[in-house]
Image (cartoon, rainbow, N blue to C red; front, top):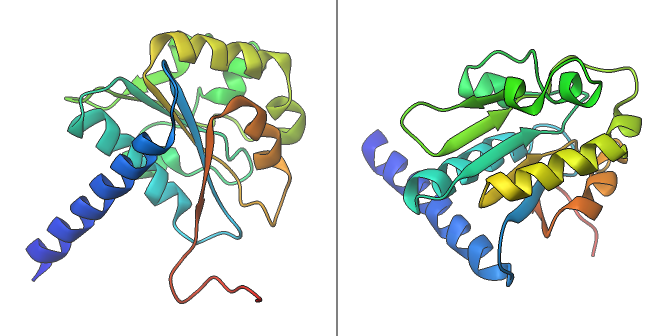
Length: 179
């Protein structure tokens, strides 16, 4: 039955949320980046559902930031407009308050990717991004970051300096590895 499948899916995200929360031993805002090795492994679905689980289930102020500046999809997941977004803020075209959208009825906020830039790596290692994360740290309990796949580009490695944890999403019966 689909009700059973939905129940088990929700419970799986709650369990993942709890494991993540218990793995970060620190006070204050917790920042977590989600990545995968290649596209289509479920990192955006996972990061969005974990963000929703944090905001709804334990009533914390949570924001998800779409830092996959090459193939953004957080806006599609939440059915929100993508522009203005992160790149607009980092380029000085918009303020942070102008790019934060909220999911109605929750403590979940969203920063979509914005305009796809010609220079994603440069934006992700900019001082403006550092300042943006410092401001998010003051406003939110959790900052969830959706990033590009690590086997494709170096963007996630540039983000690691700003976060407390990296969650690597692997698709069952899809992702391969060598022993």
